[in-house]
Image 1 (tube, rainbow, N blue to C red):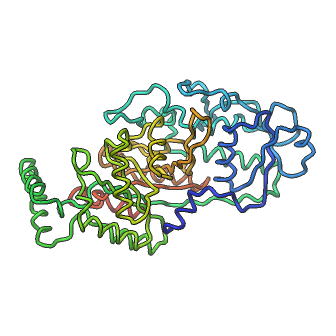
Image 2 (cartoon, helix red, strand yellow):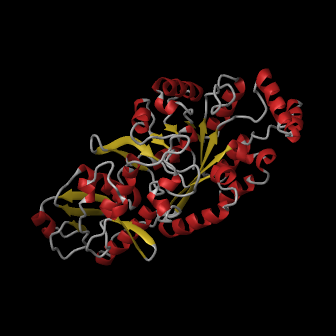
Length: 443
């Protein structure tokens, strides 16, 4: 799936399906529209219209859904007050319940047993990230703070499961409605934290690297450095292989480049170097997508973020529209608006560094929600469900293939996106042995 097709994924254009659902609601709010747009337009590929006119709704002869407390002999979702009344800081766990080990929110008396609109809003609005939670060493909202982790539901896209349940319930009333089945789409994203392992680091950095390797007894690294200096391919140089593989398979590949290189967290090759420019040029010629990997401290530094966006736009010869925060440093209260100010349209940060799973409960892209204006933001979140570092850094004893199989088992039932994050270093046998084989097995 080349760049043009990736763009279609995140445009959120109205579906071409002619089927339209009339929804009766006591209150036609921005929050309800936010959720309906996601459920019907983005996932089910249906059109919808919301009305507050009960008489008009009762007379309507087409597909319709009753979202009210009125007793109407039709497919009905009984409203829960959460979607209208919830405010940041609210304790969301009190709205949770389980049925047959499946996690749900906002129980009501209807066929589904819960208000799917309130439940989806709870997840997509990221209201839990506005509350009080224990931040990790990088000041992040991490997996163990997630309600999905606490309910052992992190590996399941619960929102996508709910929508599938709703679709089946709706089709019991309208079996003739045409709703396309969603397939699994695999998307590979690569974070380039350090363009090369040993090449193009400059004399002082290279000497410093040799000394550090000697002190730490990494004599194989010293030997590799010498070989690279005499022409051997750098162990991080996997770009051509990735480009060709995904072009051949017509599958989506998105790179995120870190540009800063002046502190302990940001150590890439100089972005002004010919080597850096050559790599980005080859990627764009291969018709794959490139985004920015905003540096460690840029998440709260508007000037630094602006500088990096201008630089990568210069390298791309067009305005950059995609980004993912380095170290996944992301604050729901501030980061989205900071990215919007700088022209970013799609953020790929929504996931966890330490665990596989669905941070927002869904595999589908969705708009961030702003509680200050009570409306959706123009920034799209494209979630991922699997990061290499969860297994090479945080949980070396866990099996990435076992977790991915569990995720894919659900996605094969409900459809959605299997979006992964790997780093250039994970393809290096010198650093991680045969771990890179996992990438080719998954993609």
